Length: 213
Ligand SMILES: [Cu+2]
Image 1 (tube, rainbow, N blue to C red):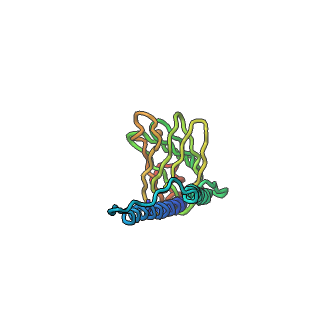
Image 2: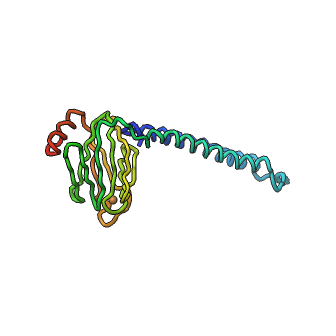
Image 3: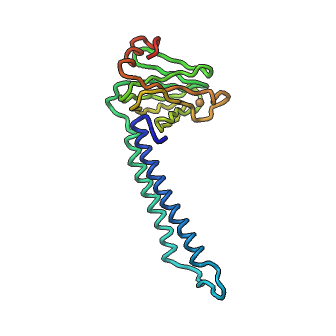
């Protein structure tokens, strides 16, 4: 989570850090106020604290302040997610991904087709440092394409094509999983993402998927 393997993952991590910082700030402030009250208004003989039934300024403050914070976090998230949702016009590579009960089909340019089964989950090969456009579809029910290392998840919805970009920055093997409960073998609906150098990816495409990079 702290070391995402894609450009968009880095953006989501920034958003996550901002939320954690805001949470820590609010937490420290609230617990600080509680501790201060416990000490300042601790029980003492012959001294009751001042009694009052309302404080308009304070009540306005604790409505307005959270609204400003939530609005700010919304704005930051919105701004950070625009590039994540943006689909580049110049993708060097396009792969059609189809989710089905209960595995995945990867259709590469040039005729390489890979079908997985629940017992033999498939591998999705991606060229390192390049933008790959994914066209995500479902053959039956709603599934969800989730690669935790990319901090990315997108639903595969029947009758709809979801298009998004993946730009992996590190070579390696990463876990992928269907993240939408879709029936009996949902738990076995996994896949591997393997990020390889362009030359290895080219060999894989040229072989129509018969050799593994
Ligand atoms: Cu599924």
